[in-house]
Length: 119
Image 1 (cartoon, rainbow, N blue to C red):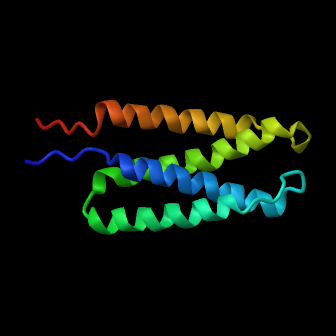
Image 2: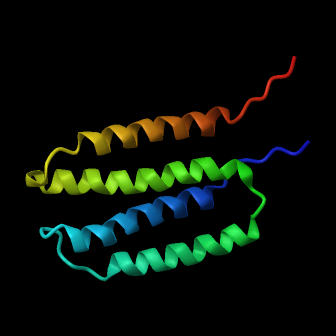
């Protein structure tokens, strides 16, 4: 019986993809956010590296759900950052709350993992 652990590379790159994807969308949709080419470069290189790791570790089913969680943590954390930076955009309560809930779930998964008990 082999034990698989959550891949830190998947976690890091999915967080970076979510963060840079929301930064790219915010550049075009929010007028207060200044234009920068760096989120586009970051998105391109993060997706490129993540695809390489995905091909190399294609059978790592343990990392899929935490990777999706960190992707959404990246998206909602940038929304919370933008809401804190520009308070005239409105409340960022939903973004902060969802980021914290997903972060707590991710820490639980990381610490305890999937415990399968049999009778």
